[in-house]
Length: 377
Image (cartoon, rainbow, N blue to C red):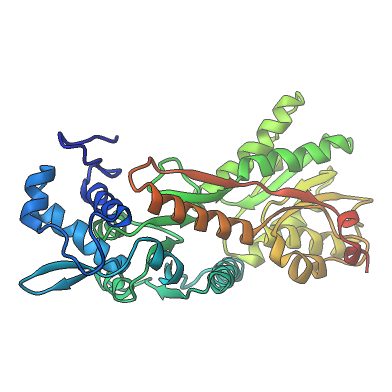
């Protein structure tokens, strides 16, 4: 919940007024009240004037130093060295990549695509990207590294309460990418998994299917992406007056390709197999396609299938996984769109540091072979 002090300093989300005080000083610099070369008020004066603790005022000044607006001069205070609009154009953004040891190739590829797109966007703006892997490193060490790089914003692929607290104290805008959860910890961008499930099943229903199966990671060990995509699929069936039968829900360990292959073959080998399968993970769809080939089934004729893939990997990875003429539809979402949305959120947060956390959803679109001539090689 937001609140204000008696002097009007707006507290940041989580009740910390340092970001609000930093915003007030930043506005004063932009308005010319504090000229380049002049000193801003001291910690003691800021603390008294805005009714905040001395440590709060000190954090606000340090965050503006990180932004490149102020320079700390021992025994004198903080001198203005730049206008707010200047560092926006030149200071780097940091992308913090959590540890992915043991992750599947699919997720490693996703992180790599995110990194590439952030690098491309940074290059377009004439700024650099500071990429930091922090899997097993102390959080304080990582934050010190990005502060030393004088970054103006932080993008993370996962966030702990400790990281959020430390980055928040540093006054750095933070955006979480590929978010999927119930509680929004900070500004975030996520995939619309529920809509993806709805659209996939709706497509199969329009083609006359009523015996539809689901195959995906185990709910007990996976993240909320599973629940959202499964929930959308179940919801679409319910609106059509149908149910997803329990024997048509196939789960396999999240990163076990062999288990997915075995489960897909067992599903399609039943005496009364499904006529269509929803496989909203790329590796799951590939497993179903491979099992279909082994059993002599033709996708699009004997079996309909809907997969899931990023737009960036569709032509290079998804399409080649299936025989010519048998590339199934896929729910496709754009990594580049997610990156640009994250960048916009960083800019919004810099301009409005005390606004409530915002979530932007990237919606996948159904892509069929007809949408891509190369699919019919």
